[in-house]
Amino acid sequence: MRALAGDSLDGPEVFSLRTVPVPQPGAGELLVRVEAVSFGYVDGLIARGLYQLKPAVPYVPGAEIVGRVVAVGPDVTGHAVGDRVATWQLARGGGAADYALLDAGWTVAVPEALDAAGVAGMMLDYLTAYYALVDRGGLKAGEGVLVLGAAGGVGSAAVRIAAGAGAIVVAGASTAAKRRTALDCGAAAAIDYLAEHWRDALRAVQPPRGVSVVVDTVGGSTFEAAFRSLAKGGRHLVLGFAGGDIPRLPANLPLLKSGALIGVDARHLVESDIVRAKQIWNELLAQVATGALALPTVHAFPLERSGEALSALLDRDKPGKIVVTM
Image (cartoon, rainbow, N blue to C red; front, top):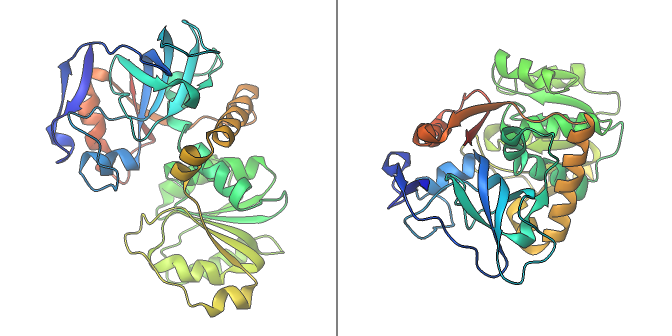
């Protein structure tokens, strides 16, 4: 079979498409013929050796996988050849190939009508956004939500999910094109969070009761100002630091705001409570199947160009989620 593999973690340029044997499923495993695999921010960090997880090499990237079961390992129940399944398996990867091994206990069924590329593109970002807003943030219909980095993978997912839940979403994005993207995802308004007086712009468009939840994928210089923009009892959800710097927050601010600073770690969720993670995936897929939730915009590459797809992760302005299709 074909697989994109690297013999080191020294950057996307060391990965190449090669021919390798088809793996065989062991206990608790499924062998799937891959339909699509999505590359995300973490995949780019792993490929450059910059993530805390350092997988063994040769390494095949791609953890957000959609595929058709072609073989079932020993002791696996509840799965059969022909099932269409999806997962996110960060530690294992392996999706950028014709066939991949999946942990049977980490998979969910994928409705036949859904686009494989879109489903692959949602597995991590939509899980993260839903877990942040619902499980960690306790979002309620009618609340104001500020999403920083609203045109990115997790940010755009948060806009869609929050708006679908009845929240009033203000999107923070750095360019006019990104703000248009966020509005297309369901934001009620969009602002430039890098502008000098961006909090004035926020106050002009936020709902009367203010911002109850901040979804922050950026960090950096906007972090403290975003927390200061919370209404009383607000929740500031920390999802990442795409802005580069890891900021600090004066300890008096949570007291003054009666507010909460809440970390969101989807990897911890999956590794510690896969039952809950699968419940969230099933809920999201059901919403997509009924049309209540849209799949992400994807930029698809064939497997022959999977090395190019991995390199495209370095482009901060890439058009949509990077997905490799077979």
